[in-house]
Image 1: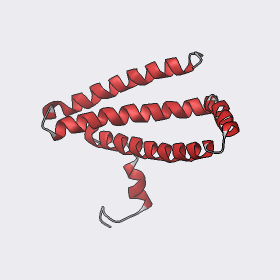
Image 2: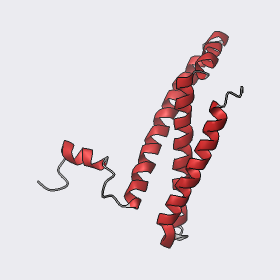
Image 3: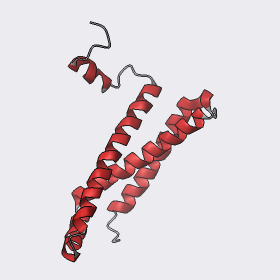
Length: 131
């Protein structure tokens, strides 16, 4: 059996981060964040279409939007957007020939910066401040 044969073993191995290069990990993170943001966009459009039902639907939406489960989901969206965007900046810079020799360090630095920004958003989102 060659490595290109489809099987559940090969599929599951794709999700195993052990023995992967940092470039492969960056690729996997970028794909997951893109898929997550795509799912969010679809759900967002479905929810927005419900708001066309009138004022009561909007009021119900506001109550739902303030629930802890939704706030946690929003944190995942924020994290996905920041990580995907930072990784995209790295890819764009490398595509134009900038910082290619330090792309591993650039990836690590951008991910650390992303975590700091996500933490900042999380603190403000869950600090109890009313919007």
